[in-house]
Amino acid sequence: MKKLRSKIDKIKQTRWFTIASNKFVLATVGFIIWMLFLDVNSYLIHHELNTEIDELERSIEYYEAEISRDKKQLEELTSDPVKLEKFAREQYWMKKPGEEIYLVEEVKE
Image (tube, rainbow, N blue to C red; front, side, top):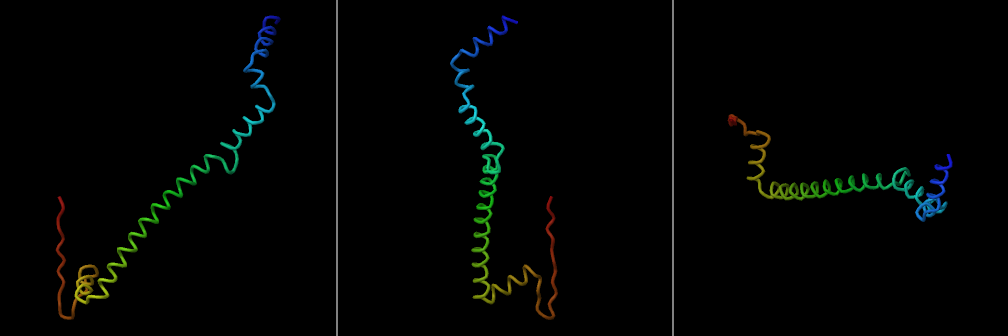
């Protein structure tokens, strides 16, 4: 028992143990652990939210590009009746009275 006690006393006298057992150091380490992992505003939650923000910004860029493409197509369709007719025939299979539509499907191998 004395050997164990003497070993513990030697450990208590080392510099790192006195620094690590300081109540301010322990409080600071506890606070850092709390803020990084356990708090509502922890680093992990902020990382997840930043990832979600990045994904949303990418989707905004995609949809803005789609909107500009659609606006350009709308402008072309409203300015040229021939293009409007071609679009209606190709996309919605519209036809003039008395016409017949034949759909030819391509076989993909």
